[in-house]
Length: 421
Ligand code: UD1
Image 1 (cartoon, rainbow, N blue to C red):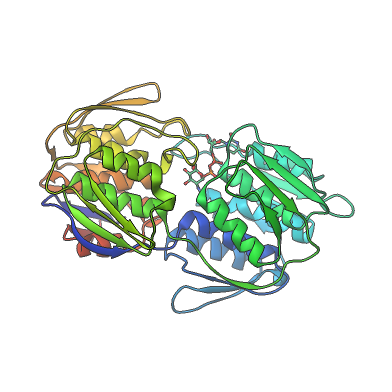
Image 2 (image 1 turned 135 degrees about the horizontal axis):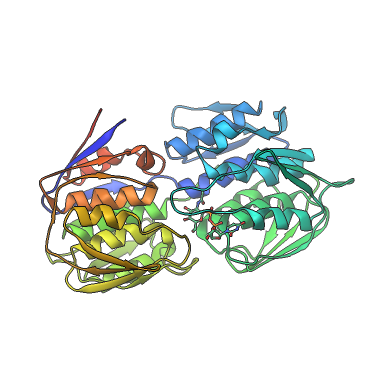
């Protein structure tokens, strides 16, 4: 199993390009199943999760052509199988996103029940409730969700989500695009990735309004057509590099991303003492050599502070000046990386869903183990500010979400390399 070896050192400095967003690309790939014509998806990041979604589409007989830049042309109407098997779903929970599109376009779907994962139990009851409201007949048996559309197809419905769910909003919004009549989603997620998915569906001919607000209205259409769609930039990847730069007292510039989707993160970086500048498609951060100041964080649905940036800020706070509280409200067990950080000399204690962090000037290198995608990114940040060589094990997690991570950190002057076992 590959590991990353990071030699802690000086400040990050330089410029990199931000990749396409994983969390926007996954639902968009699933949405191509709704179309009666080929859809070209561009700016896909080269990541394991994207390969898994492509493998899932292929396993269902869907014809697709991958070009040399990882643009993919997908012909959803060629789908011959409507089953998402356990072998693929167990490696990526986002496979559940094919449920709504398959059901809406082909009238039936069988998707393995996604199990728990390192960051909590993550149920899908809201996805199922939304589809049931549209008339779907759903059975959960032998580890599979089997869904059938009612006679005449899915019908528009009024869906009020019990909690803000990104995947639930996406699944039901996709299904509603081909349902008969109007669907109104309330307490919908407002994440930029939802807006990107809605924009892609609209480019395919869907009638959607209100995306980006808590109420989304979808007027179902008979069929969706082809389009070419460019996936938005990855705000979490961008945020991760910005925090890494702040933790190392560095100065970096990111290309191909604007500041609008990152407001909550940029506000906290400014509070930590960073000088931030930005234009339409770039963001720069400069710590001017200063140690970051500790900042309090509480994760919230968008536009609040993203749970996917919590672990990285926890790493920065571990070396920041002052005491901070980081509260995780979205997922259980999402503070587990703090135990690994303490092995590197961080001073973090946990009470319920809050980490109390007393900043220390530097960490000490140690072998550590990644437990999930964002936790692994935080351990890389910790490695960059530790004295000595930190070995991060189980980095397959990081390959699920960070394109060319070694190359990008090299470009910023870090010493980091992949070692085989
Ligand atoms: C997506 C993101 C993930 C991010 C998360 C929250 C993708 C592929 N993943 O995950 O990176 O951390 O949003 O921003 O886009 N819940 C239920 N029942 C449901 C659905 C969700 O109880 O049917 C709960 C979850 O357990 C969790 C909360 O709602 O506590 C939010 O989950 P959700 O927004 O659905 O996360 P994902 O879409 O899985």
